[in-house]
Amino acid sequence: MNILLLSGGSGKRLWPLSNGIRSKQFIKIFKRSDGSYESMLQRVYRQLRSLDFEVDITIATNRAQVSAIRNQIGDKADLAIEPCSRDTFPAIALAGAYLVDVKGISEEEFAVVCPVDPYVERDYFEALKMLAEQAEKGEARLVLMGIEPAYPSEKYGYMIPEKKDRISKVLAFKEKPDLETAKQYMEQGALWNSGVFVFRLSYLIEQVRKKLGYCDYQTLLENYAKLPKISFDCAIAEKEDSIQVMRFGGTWKDLGTWNTLTEAMDEVVIGDGRMDDTCENVYILNELDMPVLAMGLRDVIISASVEGILVSDREQSSYMKPFVEDMHRQIRFAEKSWGSFKVIDVEEESLTIKVTLNPGHSMNYHSHEFRDEVWTVISGRGYTVINGKRKPVKTGDVTFLRAGDRHTIIADTGVELIEVQLGREISVRDKKKHELEGV
Image 1: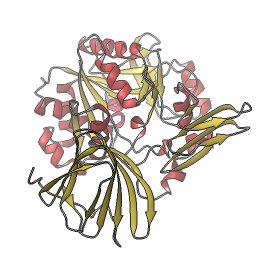
Image 2: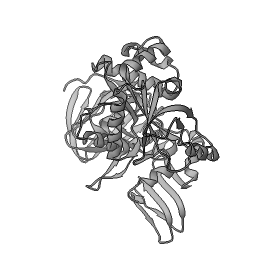
Image 3: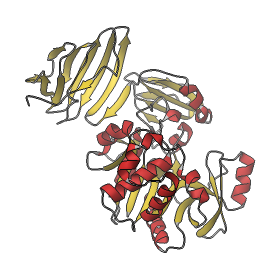
Image 4: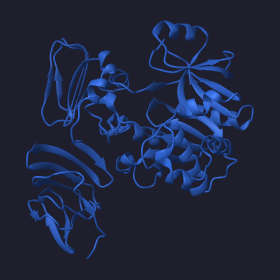
């Protein structure tokens, strides 16, 4: 079974743990058996890999998220990478062309498209298999999964089925309604739109050719920035007459807001947090190295990171997006393919960062035109390469880098270091990559 996992979004509804690079699927809140935490991406990927039937997984994502994906699930995952963010129709079109033109999958095979970030259990993946089997019957050109609503909701799009049978023709798609309309939809047997689609790859290629005039991977890649920003629903599903929906009544939660995310948390406190006995329905998620104390609160979310601090009523947290959009500041935390960085101090002519390198990994070999840097290794060992010269470093060593020096550090063990950037023009744009020399 060919699985296309859609990984996108900017994560503004889960600020301050998410930012322009770290979307909601990368936040580690689900506790593993060993006491560590995993993200939505890691959880879904692990669940897929543990199935007792064969799946081929490709993740459709944008360039900004590649490092975070590599950091969390390694280098073995196949990625269909958007040059820039568009919407689900361009993303699925590019990913489908990647399957055919790059991976060599036959156009006659089927693809199951699903979001990377729902909270689901094994029955969901069994349903994906049944969905693919239904598509293979050829009764419809497009088969969707519809979620049986647990309550009338204004947050989801709806599908109106012809009948209340397990498999039914889709009569209509409805946008996110008001509460009274949602109740009426439920009475009609309507289903939440899960964003899960199954189609034969030849069908997708045909539709892309009709909509765009071309469908091969290389041409789509070269013209991607010009493609229309339109969802797969609007571009394809809502215009398709031969379409079915399969009901799913198992575990499914869309964790798109703090309110819904906390419903799936195993613990009410993650990180250094405490609350007194008078608190009710309070959640603390703290990534800072300082304690958070809550007293006398009810139905409140407290979330703290280097990006900021949120204190919100659970229900009101769903409406934070316009406030976050007005906040413009440098991203202070990101996971990279080689490790992670966290900004810990910002001054007018200096920037201090804590850098964590995973064992065997390194930064890009690069230089800066307008700033000097000072590296202090606080744990681990490895070696630096500066202007082609290799030098071992260990805990306590200090390295001075002048503007123009080509440099990197390569970790033997895991390495943590404090990087102080010094200069009048400190900018993420002041970086030039080079081919690694002398190693």
